[in-house]
Image (cartoon, rainbow, N blue to C red; front, side):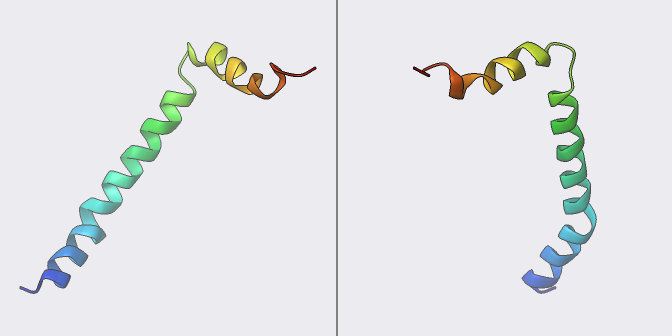
Length: 51
């Protein structure tokens, strides 16, 4: 089996599954219960050093 064919089959099957799992994990990380305080803090960073 060629390297390209093997990598293409992997990307078509497990690569897509891994990308979807990563996306779901990122969404869950952002919307977890304790994330609001850190998100609000990060949103205010540009205005901290304002004169």
